[in-house]
Length: 90
Image 1 (cartoon, helix red, strand yellow):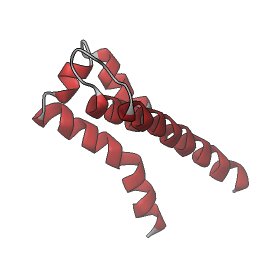
Image 2: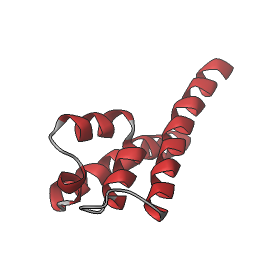
Image 3: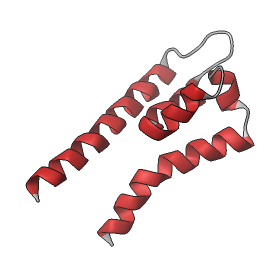
């Protein structure tokens, strides 16, 4: 059961970002080109997803949206740090 939860935590934000990219225009508005959102989806999925959701055309990300982008950064860092911690404690 624990492996399923870990797998969903790993794949979940990437699937959500991919669905947002395919079915909405939000990702195309937030990012110029293909490489930044692609590498964001691979390396920092929470940050890329929250940035695409919080982006407002013309004004960018600010206010409460910036809080969610910073939360995404913390979630991405914690997921990498917890993986490193679990490898060390085994």
